Length: 408
Image (cartoon, rainbow, N blue to C red; front, side, top):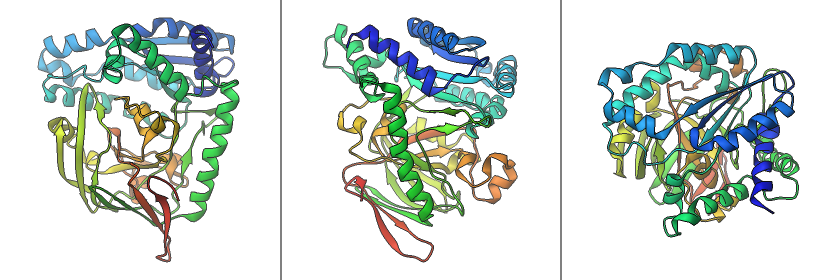
């Protein structure tokens, strides 16, 4: 298959399966300038699907780094309210949101961590209302990726420079099933497979999950009437969408104060332009009480210190070690891909849809049910071929859920 055909199919998949653009709907695309050819292709596909407007929110790594290097400290405490209000208004009117990820994982290496933390907190506070639309699946949204030279060089450092971006395109096409005979149908079948696991887990309603692996001894309590989700979602108007492409996970929310023990990461975490590696978190009654990392420890501590909710977990996700992305043996340095090669957890806010009736609950009602809220939601990878997980039922019976990294 030619690159041009795969490129076209990828844009088609993003529009028809990712955000599933509806007639007369507005599509908002957040993308780097380097992805302009792909963005134009997406816009054409969206208009052909009946979109009323396609609005592009351009980003640029060079300008982002320039600001962090040269702007005064006070600049990072501000977030443009016109932008936050505009996103809220478009979400209220039923827009769909597509995020195209292409950031250099080392973009902010060497920047004062206080600046990054301040900027992240300001954005989190300003976008709190908008993010409620996506965290509760009221609107359709999807995250995909396209290569950049800097990102490709990190993933394939041993290849000649002119082969790195094509190699990353090829890996993305494979991970998102674009190289199959019918990518849209392949995704419908994949969703059905994930949904079968969801149905089994929701029927079980495990009270606890027990994790064992090198460096990991962890117990996670799950809230009453929790809901596992995997594959696609449905927005409040009944339209389906795929929030992450690729996705290999089924996930739910942990009980905020029900996490105890220690967990060790198994893949690097790229967080706002800094790479964090080989880190360990210790929990007591849900709270992170100890943090250590071989690389990026201060960035990790800044993340945990963002707010009260960032000291707790908001997601527990199960991914077999034999997932297609894991079997590729590629470390992507990009959470969108690496989290789908590994069991993972998320620091910070939980999705309200992971509790029965949660999408209609207030923050106070969610808190009463043990659902964590925070300005951040950051996934980190903990799975390996050596991980075993048991599910414990309400009547204290432990059952094997994962053995040697895969479904038992």
